[in-house]
Length: 352
Image (cartoon, rainbow, N blue to C red; front, side, top):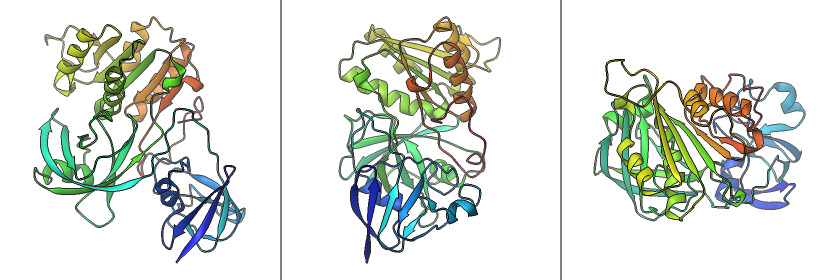
């Protein structure tokens, strides 16, 4: 059994299977709806129901309050149709966005690398190649229980569509990342779905780009930068990458080599907690401080892509805006869990 979903203002009509969420049906049809956590926690995917009936599913009372349900609002990531439905969604047109339908993939783990003491590189040979835009992510099935997934950015460029790379940081107490680090092994069969996300380079703007990355957030930035360099971009590309200590700064040698090979690419690493007696001669401090120093506090005429933990992203947004770069030129993607999804968003930045 299925129902028809009409998405306004674009007028698209799709079939939604019984038990399928509104968001999943849209993404698999190549229609993007705003979303973030995909678990009914952050309210990013809130839409208006114009006609029809839905089951609100697991939407939290914090993200979707009782009066909103009565007024005909729902969360697309949880809502399941009980009739034909018409919704109104806040769909922002993006000239550089590709409409790539989400698909299911299977593959084999062919390599596992310790990139840092807490980050593993997981390399997967897919049975069929995945089409994606650099900066997007996949949902990886965790072999602990049915339906358990975790979101990981693709660290490889789109040209490597058959063998993908995930950079997985071990989260203390995290069931999913703990399973990847402690149980997953070479030769295992795995499944995933994708691509997801609205994090990609706005190439049509034809302006210099800045990438501010921290921890495993380097994965998205690396994919985007490798893609640009492979395409032969001659515009200035700057990566400011941060870690606490030298052993946590991964792909350092590769990035130094790329900077030597490409005159338009600048790599500026920063360590925030490196010991004073270490041989490190680079910048000591946080990513936002390194960026401020490198650009002398002036970021005008560029587009910035932020990849990392929420505190780093918020600090970088403040510095960028102080340096005359504003919301229309700053892009970021945060992954939400139950703990941080209910935190107040930065009043300076509506898109986050």
